[in-house]
Image (cartoon, rainbow, N blue to C red; front, side):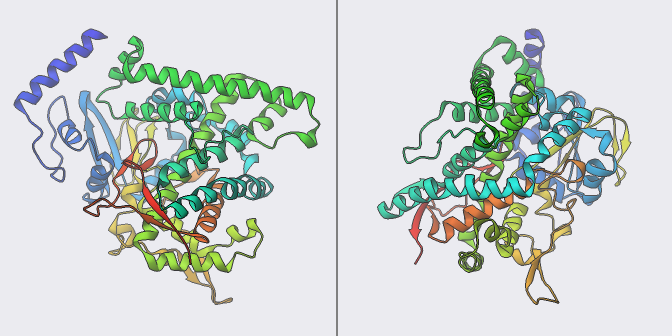
Length: 496
């Protein structure tokens, strides 16, 4: 393997001597023998999501072919017909595939987000019980509300009193991490406390996600596989982080087994791990794989969505006023009913995720030769990426005002009640939560959590971003989920 890596480095060095990546990021794709579009990829390596979004929207069919080195060709699309084709019509022909599975296996193992076929169906059926109305009500009224009132709001109030700067992105990630650990493990890591502790488990999880995501951006999987074989650099840290995560998960699982064995049903925890063990699923790896997948989904997706939402509210004060008006109008309702019925806030969150989807790009692998609805030929083993970030910016899908943050595009007046009601969009135009058989199980839970946070925070405070001297907007960056580069510094102001 070392010989192959050395040869690769030599070849690329020769190429870079004669062909330098000097063209602009918005120039047309240029393809060369052996390396394909690598020079374009290299030029845009720090903004791949934005660049591929531009390429999608510059294509008449909202689809283009990205040629990676060594003859790898990848379809990248924002075409709703193609999205429906791969997520529903030909669902069985497109799965996570070997590339995705092997890249994330060290972290996710054979968890629900990393498998296909019968294994995926079984885990989805097993996990679906966590998302019934009773479970959702418990989640909002006990877990989320407790974390909000006992931890997040007091931290914000202290910051408002002392006029200090907080990293809201970090706070929201800690908030979501505590929430999902309580739902998945029945364990409270207390990651969101005034001292903002560096939890060993949370840090290991963050490192594992970050390093795993960088594997996708390497010129060839051979590079990270060699580093893993030699146990050096980032791959060494990934191995350590995954060990810490699984050691912790095993410890929690053993404690949970003892709790279930000694406590009566009325005294047992209501969480994903307890449910699995109670149903007789005692295989350590199987259970921890599923739970780790749930933590990944619950920690990063909702915090990413909320981070960008608060930024867009600041940039659009009229929308913020409408959200605050709705929040105050619902303040006397029971907690679950309050957040369930927040129509305008729900629309505003959807609009925010249109522009800044928590998962900006997702991929499938073709299990057989196929022809996509626009005529694109797909060979077995090719990756097809659908691009929610690009789709949210497509004038063909959203009109000339796609740049505007306008929740009203999600609402219409009910002719019977004369009140505004939420109107969902075609999930293949708006695949933020995927679509088809694999649509996100936690969609309703995510909305309830986000609306409760928005309600609790905006009822008391105004979030004011701390801009740099040039007044620049936050820089969008993506790993497995979207983030703001260098965090989201804000000041908290008491709402009058």
